[in-house]
Length: 460
Image 1 (cartoon, one colour):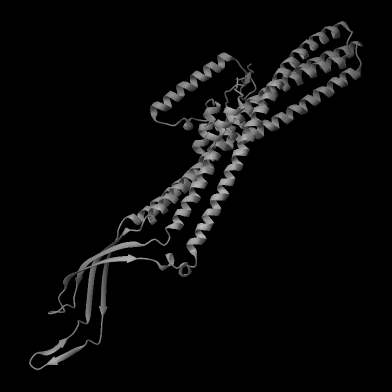
Image 2 (tube, helix red, strand yellow):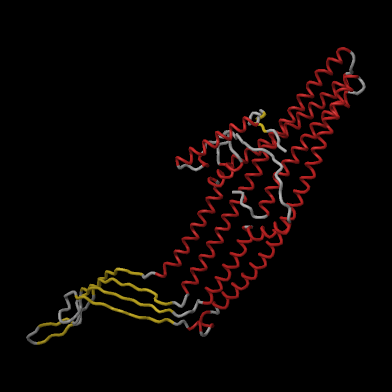
């Protein structure tokens, strides 16, 4: 089942027009691919499919860029933790003036100073932690787990924006086609009003018939105003998502199609629990909490450090004024007593472990909650699609009945056996039936995307 499309000016698009537009769009995409430009760089004057719109939003939306920067910042924190694996080195330049200078005299040798008044010491030193019994490794593992959590948030942001773009895209198509149906109704009512006025002039109809028709025309025009207002709001939302100027045209290309969907609840729920980003985010929260516990467990592990220094200084005998090379080497083993007597550390390790354990249990409970919500989302999406199919079938029958009723009403009206009000009712019923059918098809298409979102299928 396919619906007619309209362009921005409300003109009906034929299938040949759509085919030509798609061919042009394909050619443009090939040109961009050959020039190394991303599809999102296409001008807003080009025709946009729903996939094109999603790509543009995800490439330019500030929310996505903010989430990407958050991932970069989290990755940098991993590098910060890994930096302790490397040695540290420093150059030190020191000068000290000391006085009074201790000295003593020998007959025949003069005065001998025990140290120089001007003391110089220049050296380079390096130090490194040789072993810390996996303390640094656990810190790096925690940072990596946190990076994965930030990436999950990025994917959730992309998923939310993709679905919002899809919904807004199809809302615009729906409202444009609804306005077209409303315009057809208004045109029909105006034609009927002109005929009624002629009959009033000829005396074959009353002013009541004309007034009744005018009321129907005004009501249809008011309904059109509401549709135009909703369309403007949706177009503003889509332009905001796309990041394009408010006066940029939106040449959308798409159609409402009744695509078959498999309704196997068990397999869809299994796919959702496997693929939904929320489940992956919950698992990553558990992994991060467990990594935090491991960090706490290594808090008071011993560490073995080595330090080397080499430089030049004065003050050495036999000539304390000459700079001489010197070195120092040290090996240090640190064993915090807090690991043996928790009192010295304020019970910090056990407190951190209790916090990590509670966080882990909370993350596990959250995962169970997410799993229940996912199962409910899948069931709701399937139920909505079933209802959507039923509404589509009912709407098809209603349109057929309304068309037949209007055809009969026109014949009886011409024959003079039907009142003006009855004919108006038949025309209004057909217009409402078309709108109901269009809305049912729109709801079905949106419901199909909701099911894809519920099972974790990527729409971006």
